[in-house]
Image 1 (cartoon, one colour):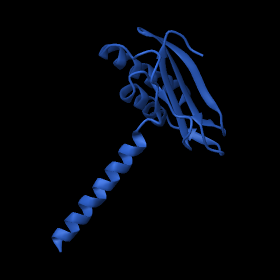
Image 2 (cartoon, rainbow, N blue to C red; image 1 turned 45 degrees about the vertical axis):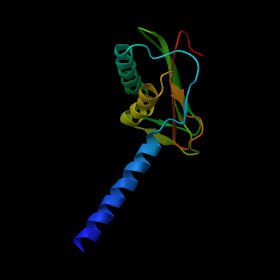
Image 3 (cartoon, rainbow, N blue to C red; image 1 turned 60 degrees about the vertical axis):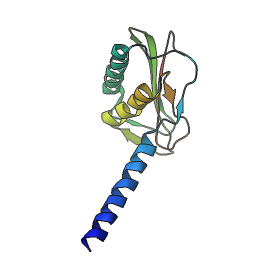
Image 4 (tube, helix red, strand yellow; image 1 turned 90 degrees about the vertical axis):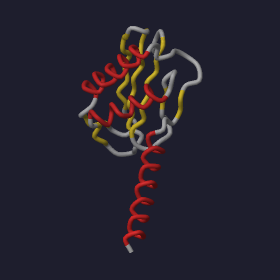
Length: 131
């Protein structure tokens, strides 16, 4: 009986971890454009994302409403964006904002974006200019 319970718990944890990993995967990594640069510049980009979310997080956003701005850093510029992809007003917690952007800095060499998922749609795009 203990073995069955252990197997059930192990299976549940494995499925749970797989679901979290799948949810954390970027919707789209850019294949062209600017790079994050050196490891120090990547760390700087993450810090800039955190600072950006201190400004734009902890706020309510209506359906389709986004916060978007261009940030200077040592390797050029970063376009950060977070958009409410739901059809209702949503609260954007600062840490939710940061995790959404952080994913594209860590997992995508050239940045990335999400324009398809329901919920929060992030974008972190390094380069020499911003749109």
